[in-house]
Length: 100
Image (cartoon, rainbow, N blue to C red; front, side):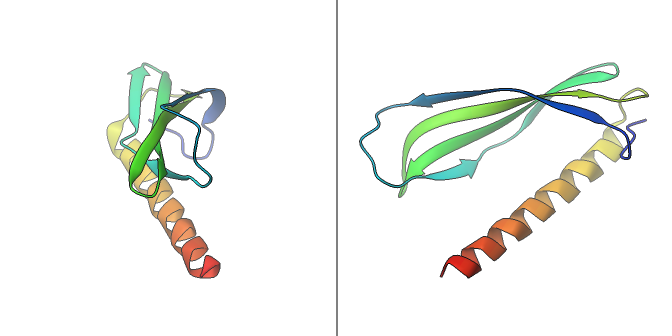
């Protein structure tokens, strides 16, 4: 079972790739995350696009190493991911309101 109170999450790396660097302002758009599970360990890949306006100028991903005390179960993990995404979207929505 995925222990929501005691997961070990380690930021492992980040990869960036740009088509060009001749832009002044950019934004980051989250893409579909991916997870590779192997027993009590997993690697999570948080993919994103870097945009200027509507044009994609780069891509990247963050890689996280995850370890849990017990084996992986999809239902608690999906609830954890859903809660995280809801909080992230709420935070980003509040940022957009504050910046205008």
